[in-house]
Amino acid sequence: MDLRSATARPAAAERPGQLRPAVAVATFVLVMLALVQFGPSARALGAVFLLCVVAALAIVDLEQRRIPNRIVLPATAAALAAQIALNPRRAPELLAISLAAGLFFCLPMLVSPGGMGMGDVKLAVLLGAALGQAVVLAIAVAVLASFLVAVALLARDGAAARKSAIAFGPFLALGTVVAIFLG
Image 1 (cartoon, rainbow, N blue to C red):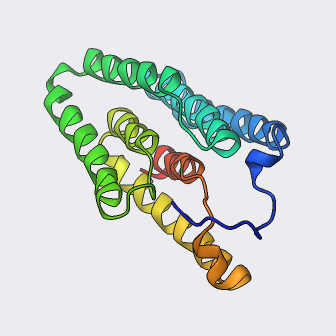
Image 2 (tube, one colour):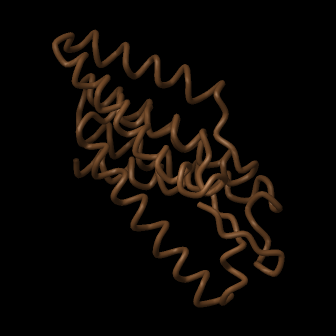
């Protein structure tokens, strides 16, 4: 999401490492909750995997404003392979959902190049592969949360906030958490 401003407060990218301990603790708590909620199961393993991946991607996106292929692409392949191994009949559905999630994020790129990155598109594909239909909830939560932050920035900084940039990966991570536990 593109909201660039030279007058805005320092971004996480300018304060590397400050959020890592908080994200690590939050991820640990969420992993424990997933293990308790889903018990010893493939669903628990998938949730733990996805929680760890989106936490790592959120940190990188906050610090560097990018979602690295070396994390998102193997994670997507692993999620798809695991899902298909567990239920081969869902392969066409999961592939379609993954593609649809990625295409949904291509639309903003067509309307406003630079407003959304390809990393966000690839992350949406991963979420489609891992969450299946629950990706709709994850995306809805991410879009709503990012909209609320954008409105808050506009209220705080006025028109200058329109030139600010905020990382979208953390919002997709938040949506993922909601989808895992409520989807």
